Image (cartoon, rainbow, N blue to C red; front, side, top):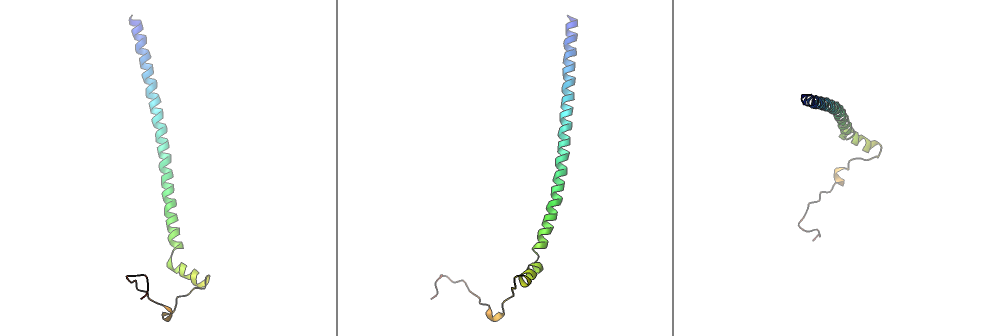
Length: 94
């Protein structure tokens, strides 16, 4: 009887040991995956910062003004050509 009990306890011990090893391996793999994802997130943050800087460079007022005047031959209207329109209560003129 004690031989069977010893075998049962040994079997239980082996199963518990294998469960611990399996859990440690799964945790290690999950940690490696987490580190990989964090590295990817850092790379994406850097790329986002670069894209924001590029966008602000392309949208600078001086650059737009230069393109408008040189490439599109646009210019500011003279003051005599400017009309100020005030919003009234109705859309029809009286």
